[in-house]
Amino acid sequence: MSDSIYRHIIAITNRLLSRRPFDVQIERICRLHPHALILREKDLSGEAYQTLAEKVLTICAGYNVPCILHQFTQAAQNLGVRKIHLPLRQLEEEHVKLKSGAFELVGVSVHSVEDALRAQKAGASYVTAGHIFATDCKAGLPPRGTDFLKEVCSAVQIPVYAIGGIRPEEKQIEKVLSCGAAGACIMSGMMEC
Image (cartoon, rainbow, N blue to C red; front, side, top):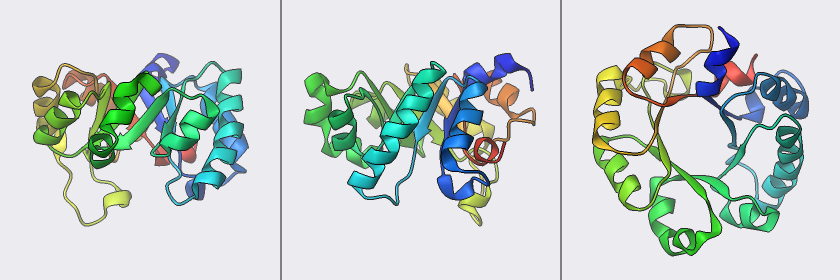
């Protein structure tokens, strides 16, 4: 895959998938210069997440890769991070905090056109829509496909990033871009690169 395609990719972490020490893997990802990196380590406590985030933020800053924290709004505020990614329910629950200006970028995970419209109305800066292709992360669930992605992209005025079953070495990035998406989110392919 050409280096220029990485500018359309948001790397999503899952330290349990990495075959290398996590910090080494984050550095490998940052050397590819993706559009951004989402630190998605949902199983950690808030304190453990904040400690890990400090290390990852330092690595990302060294490569000028924006780091978006995931779900842990308090850790983000403690660290002065103004980029956060949330489930739709959390966005709606924390609407007042988010409207206070604590965050300059708010991403939201969506699974329907209705979700995307709700996220946009609640102030999301972008959405991730999926899962688009078959993925082990959603084993047994049929993918929503590129027609679904086109519908989401047409319904909202904010950037849409495809997620689910996207591998960096395949032609899926071009497919999602042709649907109107701003890019794609990749977890397994980035954590195993």
